[in-house]
Amino acid sequence: MPDENTLQPVPEDWQRALAIAAHPDDLEYGAASAIARWTSQGKWVGYLLVTRGEAGIDSMRPDETGPLRTQEEIAGAAVVGVDTVDFLEYADGMVEYGLPLRRDIARAIRQHKPEILITGSFHLKWPSGALNMADHRAVGIAVLDAARDAGNRWIFPELLDEGFEPWNGVRFVCVAGSPEAAHGVDVTDHIDTGVASLKEHEAYINGLGRDFDPNSFLKDNASWAGAEMGAEYAVRFEIINV
Ligand SMILES: [Zn+2]
Image 1 (cartoon, rainbow, N blue to C red):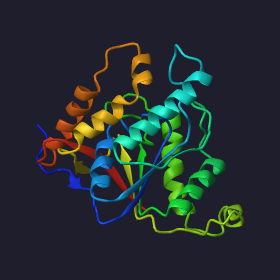
Image 2: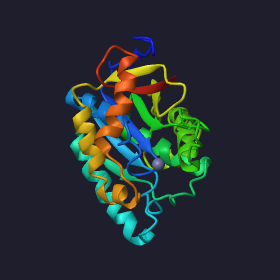
Image 3: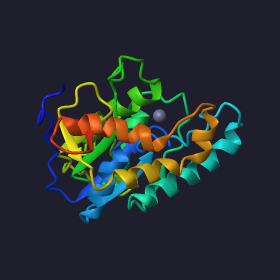
Image 4: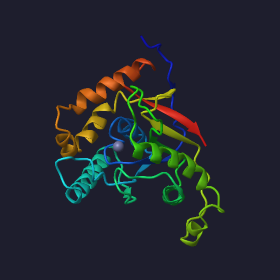
């Protein structure tokens, strides 16, 4: 049995967040319920997707899948109160950690001036012990580094030429799906919105080729996390201070 109150609440004394993920649907596998809570508090949250997830459906060609998953992501974001959804156009499944990715994320941070970032796990393994995906690992590490790059005018000087002044206001990064989560967000009043957000990814879920119920998947995970912070439902995050 998990101890109650082992997860500390994620601080909420901020107004702007940018959520950055490798693929359409990554944020909807848990983080979206917390994002629904935050937008309901009047906070601004924007999404930045590194790819369009075009390699994610085995039975469908990438040139069909990319536009479809783009639309599903925009619809899923709208459900949780997110109107800004940008895409970086990296190739799904082949995202590399490196300077181009750091620069492109740093540009978005300078543009949107968030106080916190939300991203997926950069760890080698999921909490279950299974192998995490290469794209997720590359994007997660690049997000952490870009949080700092965004504040240094001497890194990526081409961003200055494009008109993006340094932004060093990112306080911390919330990492979803981390095996080292020590914080949580009570999403008891927002889990149904999070489920609705995941259900927008209908083509992807149908393409899995197996039974998958977004409602029971998200609520099972959220009830286990909730037990660790005295809530009915919660979402876990690892917080890394910048
Ligand atoms: Zn993914």
